[in-house]
Image (tube, rainbow, N blue to C red; front, side):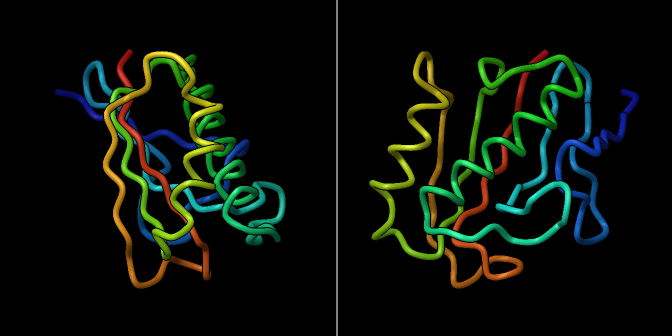
Length: 126
């Protein structure tokens, strides 16, 4: 199977030795996105709601570069530094995945890159 590396300037550049996404057959595996402003690469201001919104916009940009939308996402993994923020994160998340939401795992982690409160990775189907 041929693998294709995906990169778009509409989403933040990778902050390490990884790709924004990899296409493998009929699936797109997107690296975790944190709430960086794509234009500046700087973590946005705000709490969990603002950060979750920015993360999902970054994911949408990576998907759009391949002609996909959030409706093609089959699995998400949400990493949070504080599960006490789950309800607030879920409120924003639910607005983006309002119908046929993907399978999801959510875990609390000790820390995320650049001090982010949330990171989300997705797998989408073509």
